[in-house]
Image 1 (spheres, one colour):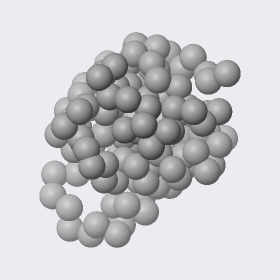
Image 2 (cartoon, helix red, strand yellow):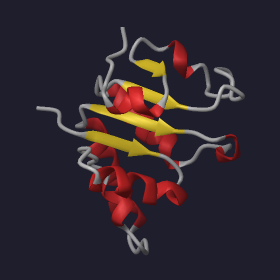
Image 3 (spheres, rainbow, N blue to C red):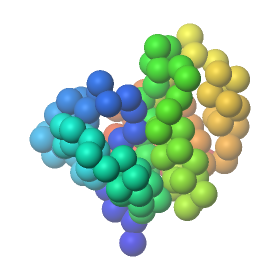
Image 4 (cartoon, rainbow, N blue to C red):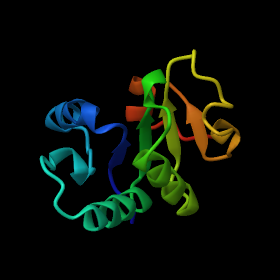
Length: 122
């Protein structure tokens, strides 16, 4: 059974995810609690497993996030597992910059508040 929200973003936004979790949102991303990465392979394995087993994935994207790194992998793993993905991104970022991802049937561009309450992609 899928559970929780997997938060994908640059590590600089870990505090935002921790704040949401502390406010009661079911954030399951364990990477947000990692201060120092000692085993990158184990971190990636755990992140991909969490993303694949989440109820939904929220990907926070800012213009300075290009090129994408680990979050791109988390998003792809989630989609492969059938997990809905909500992209929270300023309108100045185009769908083409997101690799055309918003055209996928499980992906929707939304505001953060909408993603947190889980309006499922149609």
